[in-house]
Amino acid sequence: MSRAESITGACGERGIRYLGVDEAAAYLNVGRRWMYRESQRHGVARYYFGGKLRFSIAELDAWAKQQKVS
Image (cartoon, rainbow, N blue to C red; front, side, top):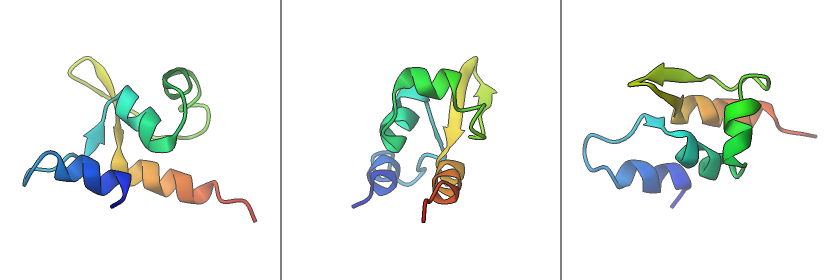
């Protein structure tokens, strides 16, 4: 089971579309600090709602695919 499946599966039928900073950092295997400071610089889509920084799982996946090195 992939990390995204385990995260969305944990929320039941509703599922999760967005991750908080800690979850997104774990999902990408980077530090929390990187998510705050470097994600915007590196082109990771970020959202603010409820006064908190959020990341879309689908956009994290798309960004990660673009980082492929030959």
